Image (cartoon, rainbow, N blue to C red):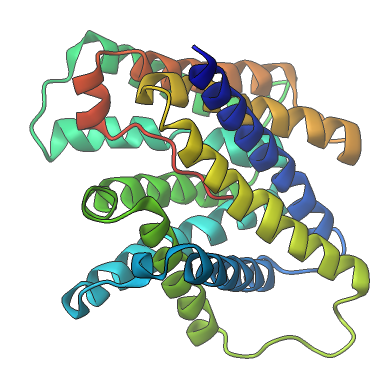
Length: 304
C-alpha cells in the first residue's frame, strides 16, 4: 500500500507541474516571446538535460539500432514537435485552461482511431465518452453569454494539439514496448527540437530575451518537462494505467486554477462545464477494463 501512495503522490505532483507550466508559458507570451521560440528552447533544453542525465545514470539507454533512427525521427517530428507547438500556440491564442481541456480530447481521438482503423468494437463506454467529449468541446467554444469566445484558429490549433498527442501515443506504442520510456522520450525531444531548428534556424534577436525570460525557459524545461515526466513514469511503476490516467486528470483543474490566480484568466460557466465533460469523458475511458485501456492507448504521456 505504501508503494501505491508513493505512486499517487508522484502522478499528482507531475499533474500539478504540467498544469502550472501552462501559466509559465502564457507569462512568456505576454512578454512577446513567440510559441516558435519557446518550443525550440524548451525541447532543446529538455533534450540536453535528458541526454546528460542518461549518460550519467545509464548510458546504455542511449543506444538504439541505426534502423530505428527513421522511426524515432517521425515520432519526434510528427508527434512531439507538433504537439508542443500547437499546445503553446493555442495558449497564446486563447487561455491556459482552454488549451489544456482541448488537448485532453486526445484519448477520445485515440478511441475513435481504434474503432475506425483498428476495427475494434465501439461499445457503450466509448460511445458515451465520445458524446461527452464532443459536447464538452462545443461548450468550451462558448462563453457564459453564449457567444463564440475563441477564434477558429485557436480552436483548430487546440484540436491539432490533441490530434498530435493521439498520434504520439498510438505511433509511440512500439517505442515504449521495445525501449525504456526514458530512451523514447530523449530521442523524441531530440528529433522534435532538431525539426524546429531546421524549420526556423534563426535563434533570436539580441536583447529580445531578458533574464526573467531565461528563468521561465529553465523552469518550463526542468519543472514542466523533465521532472514531471520522471515522476509520471515513477508513478506507473506502482499504479495501474487506469489509476494513473484518472489521477492525471488533475492537470486541467490545476491549470485553470493557476491561470485564474496568477494570470486573472476566467472561463465562462459553459466553458467550465465543457471542460468538466471532457475530463469526465477521459475518466469514462480510463475506468474501462484494462484491455480496453490498452487497446485504446489511453495512457497519458503530456510533456507540456
